[in-house]
Length: 173
Length: 173
Image 1 (cartoon, rainbow over the protein chains, first blue to last red):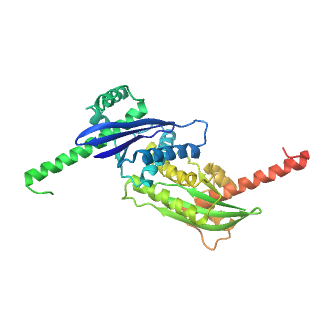
Image 2: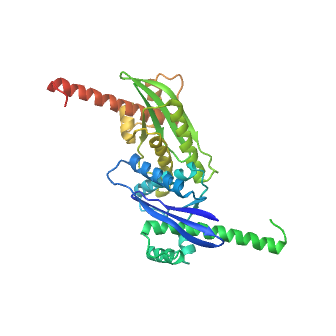
Image 3: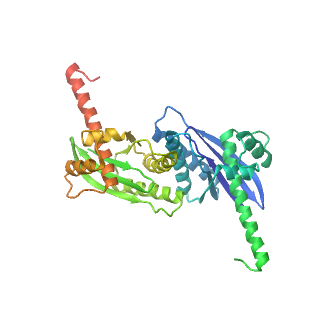
């Protein structure tokens, strides 16, 4: 069993989603969106991200954290803002001694929808389907759940490939 | 009296410098460079920035923190890396309840050298001169001391302008 916290950082909204991975199946635990007041100073906004992610970690006690790697931003200015939000979220994880994994956006979409070119509606739809949710989560929360699912799938594949190696060679490598 | 911590964040090296501002004069307290191993993962490098800045704050107990605003990076990729380092450093400050001020690079150079177009050698030279240092600090440490000095000068100007208003109008505004 592993509780995975997925994070979709942004300079205005940061999504989070927690998935419980048990015996190859994934169950929904929680998700939400940290909204950042646009009129606050940058340090205050980064403090909100750091404290909110820390609060989520303390409340749900995940074992691992996964963050979407950023597709190239439109401009250096928006990349800087996104980087700052991402730095604040990742630091909240490592400060709570969580291992933090990163996944490219294409890999997250591939893992959840089956194609790296999926759009956000397909991601929302497949997250709702895979986790048997009764309603569609907000976009940033869905992206955070998707990266948690991607991490969980990747870990399960690693376990399967280790087992297959064990079987073929008759010993653990 | 105010102890000001200046930070010059970077994805490979983060400079810090502490200046004690007493009665309009600035004294050198400490400075250094946090070097980030290039072969570590991003979360590990951000953890080093966060923990090292936190350690400096706990050791020297500054009252305020000042960070240089980033001049536009060459590419979205380098802006993202810089943003992440900056986010980790700023969060270390706000997590220790320090007020964090930001200054444009031009304003820092103007404040320390007298011209916003100064180069890094002029900044190093003037920081050495203004703080009566016996040797020239490393470039990132000098930049961090420069932003601390800029914050200190700005605060002193605010005090002077308040006094001048008091004098001219005969009452505090």
